Image (cartoon, rainbow, N blue to C red; front, top):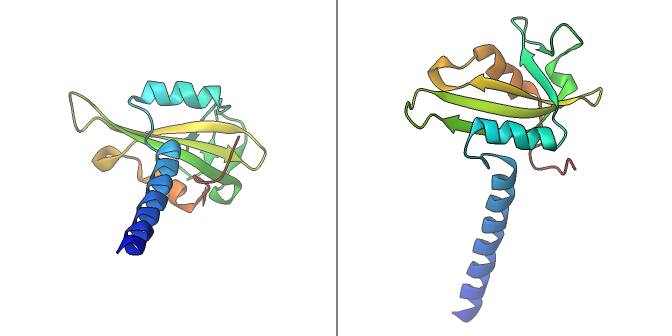
Length: 130
C-alpha cells in the first residue's frame, strides 16, 4: 500500500508541476493591461494585428504568414461587469525576431481571421523564450 501511495504521490506531484508550468505561460494575469505591461517588459514590444487577408502585420510594415510566426503565450480575460466583454492577448515572435502582442476579442465577438491564424502558427507556449 505504501509503494502505491508513494507512486500516486509522485504522479500527482508531476501533474501539479506541469499545471504550474502551463499556468506560468497562459492565463497568469488578472487584467489585459497587466498582461500587456508584463509582456512588454519581457520584450514583446511590437503591436501586431491580423489583417483581412489573414497576415500578421504591424502598421504598413512587413507582413508574415502563419508559418513565419511562433506563439509563445496567450492570456484570456473576461470583463468583471460584463461577461460578454472578453479578450485575449497573444505573445508572438516572427521569423525576423520581432516579438510583440496581438490583442483580440474572443467568443461570439472574436475575430475568426485572428483565430484561424493563431491555430496555424507554431505552438511554443511551453518552450523557454528567455
